Image 1: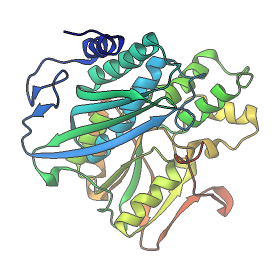
Image 2: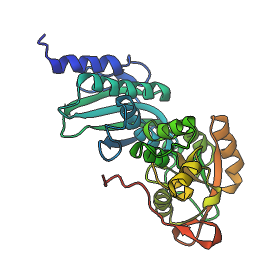
Image 3: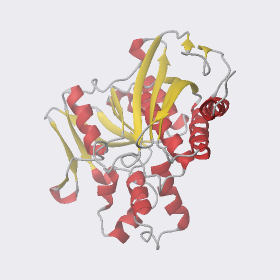
Length: 330
């Protein structure tokens, strides 16, 4: 068989990412197409990360780029309450991206896949003017009704969030301003950078919320205000958030104070990849207990209302602007 640097690189990638057939996967990496035998219902999403938009190569280690690419796609499955299954990856290679960097990106993909219980079942590698990865991810459930969409919230539902917010925006500030954070505990600073570089999709929490009766759900990629707008528009309700109730990642308040920023501005900055959900009050205790049993936290931060629109309320009657991370802007 004819050998070439390209074929050898693809073989090395296959060694990094390939998984033996089993379960739903019958044919994986190495053939012209993957073959799966899914049962029940499937949910499919596609997401991309692009140098200069979602990360910067000068700031992000190659392994972190791979991790973030897969995590962003899997976070969409988490928001549906899906059981993750397979992922398919396209990598666009600029001329200055070497073999070792490519394999390190694949190591990040593989590590994130192992942690999530996902099989990377196929993909493609092509030249590109800029480093970019596109991930298609497939999740599963017993029936279509097991998934949770954005459109089910009702007025009176509690609006809740998993985990804590602001860490990704704070981490981006630290990456872009190396002198910032000099007064911050090094462990806190490292934790904030990890929130930006290596987010964790809340898959277990998403399944717990689906089982616990969440009426609507979305992942916080665009930011609290923007994603509240998406959920509110789909459900045809309004959302009112009490910002004082929003849990902040450790170090966010301290970094905001050092930078002269309002800590809540960071909380709406986007890319935290936590889950925002609406839960009927009769199911709130069950949903909270389910998330905690899955190793997470769920905090009530607001309410769905009849009046359209989104308000991010601060003390004294003020409100924050409803905006967030713009994935179309460099």
